[in-house]
Amino acid sequence: MRDWPPKPNPRYERAVFLDRDGTINVDTHFPHRVESLEFIPKAVEGLRVLSALPLHIIVVSNQAGIALNIFTVEQMSQFNTELRTKIEHAGAHIDAFYFCPHLEAKHLASGVSACACSKPSPGMLLEAAKEFQLDLSRSYLIGDKTSDIAVGERVGCVTILLRTGKAGREEGALSIESEYLAENLYEAALLVQVLLEHDSKVKPIPARYKRL
Ligand SMILES: [Mg+2]
Ligand SMILES: [Zn+2]
Image (cartoon, rainbow, N blue to C red):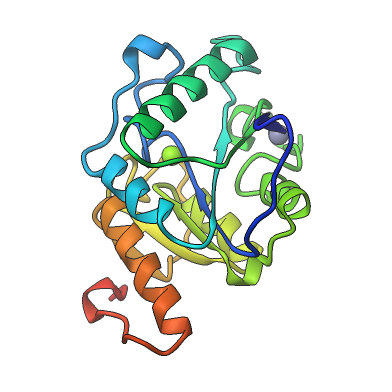
């Protein structure tokens, strides 16, 4: 589901999909209060780098706290608005927020299948791809969990795992390797910039980004 904007405005064929909690803001337990919004170091700088690139910046976020009755869709929207406003004041932007309000597989009894939009299922990315007319195989995904990497890989995006947030070690982590590792969103943004340039054969990819 799309929280914002009311009407998508497709401008580029590529997107960088960003996880929210643990990637942009600190992943406190189900963050939803605007007063507890805290940016991860270098995340805003990363968004500034991404904002100068010819791609959409699209947040895709599991928000099971809604199904768990920890917060409402309205509270999540307020949190997203606060996040977006602060980012805009810092000279960057986010083009869209997609969210899954359902329970994640880990909350469900065994044998009960999860919805089609809870990462690692690709529903949110497919919805965004349709609404923004994206080429997913030329898009990027940045996140802090293996479920982020899994969904990116599933739809053919270039995947970058961050060492912020859960750093790929969440409860029930999947055995999956991202294509790249980065210390934080800023380093990942610089990598996306290089990969875009590499696409036009300008620069080689720095070896330090390669996963060992
Ligand atoms: Mg996360
Ligand atoms: Zn869902």
